[in-house]
Length: 366
Length: 227
Image 1 (tube, each protein chain N blue to C red):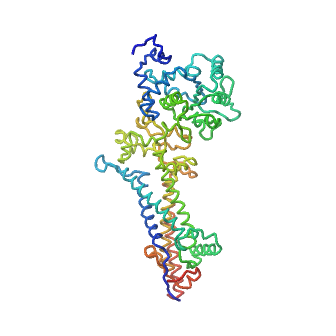
Image 2: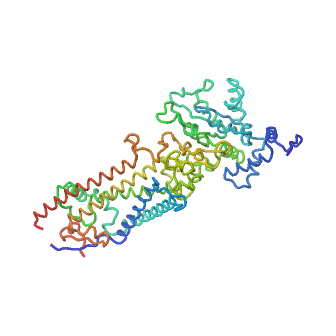
Image 3: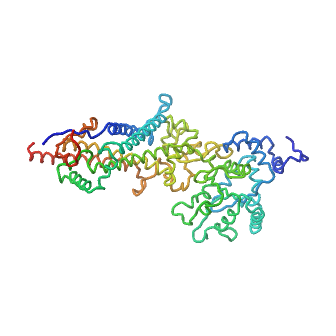
């Protein structure tokens, strides 16, 4: 559809999309895909399209804290400009340290201005954990600790979206012994409206879908007890895995590079944490839906689960090691040891008891 | 001294004992496979081996749950040897005395068990622990199963366990507890055998018939009516 500058019904976003080479068809396809990601009926696609195209979109402030910028990379690294990217780009112009052109006090002023002008109306997107130890000295932006920045920005936002495992649960820097006292936003500010999109990095379509849900319905999507949206984290990876048929068939990779591995068999015995991880990776994937870890031949490491650095190890074993027995001690070894000790114990006891009973019976005369 | 026979184990008690036994055997065997799938399937011959193993595991899990519920009910309405209260002998003075007597018996300090008709005091204590292990296995097992559908009833009833420990540790405990059951099975069968040897009261036969035998004086301590 050709762009008509005199069409009064065309919104600023639609004009912007067209200027970036995203036509109406692509836009509607995007809206339909997001509707499907949100597990809404197809009839909602029209409503989603209207809400996204409306001119009253909220501003977005995107904070970078203790993190590697992997989540930003996750959706900036698309091979071509998609509707999703352009929309996010369009929404997040106010403040985003990685992609904004301005710098220094100037841009901190922009953030302050946005917060004042759209108080209680903007969306805060947080990437990275928050160091809380020693008064929050381990992370500062523009002379303010990250604790203060997050409290101020998220405390005044209409909604906070935590992208990636760091902002959701503290991430790698929160791994034991957590030297900087890193926490997720939800732990620092338990009562604010917040949704977690953990993952290392997050799946970009889930962020898009969460924002679209907010635009369409004015609320954050329904979440589980860990504040993760059910549409994206309601099912286990294992139950939606493209390799699941190999699991059911008993076809397993036994060693890296063996024939089963080359044929794409199940990675269960290689310590895949798909059975312990709730995420929609098998469906949405990364890099324009091109690939994801299990599809690439490596087991899931459970990166979107709380404290995965501490709870998902060893990454290449089925179960955690037995605490208190040192590394490499498996439950099987300890368990078989207990059973063997029991068997040996009763055998020795049996002999001793028989001798005792024989002696007693001889004395009793039967 | 008069040799007497007493109906100790009622039918539901015996039934549940053997359904639990079968369920636990199936659960251990299929659980071992689920933990470490040792059968490497050819692509065509038996194409759903893990699926069948899991199905058998789940069916046996339901059977164990049913067994536990029936036993719990019978613990409220059954005879004196089946009642729930009897599983906590250390709560009474007589029970504690009997408990020490059993310890002396196993430490070879005395040749015979203290007089008893049902289980001895140590056995009862161990069984209450084993019932707890079985209950944990049922809850953790259904929790792990229920994760496939977090909006389902199974998860609603059992998913609370994940607010205390992460999935990996639930799986670990579910697996480790299997070895507790294995060690129990060894000790349990041995204790029955040695009890037969020392008491000659028909313990092993009572597992099927429900009747135990003994001297009248032995039973008068506990005061049941001889048949």
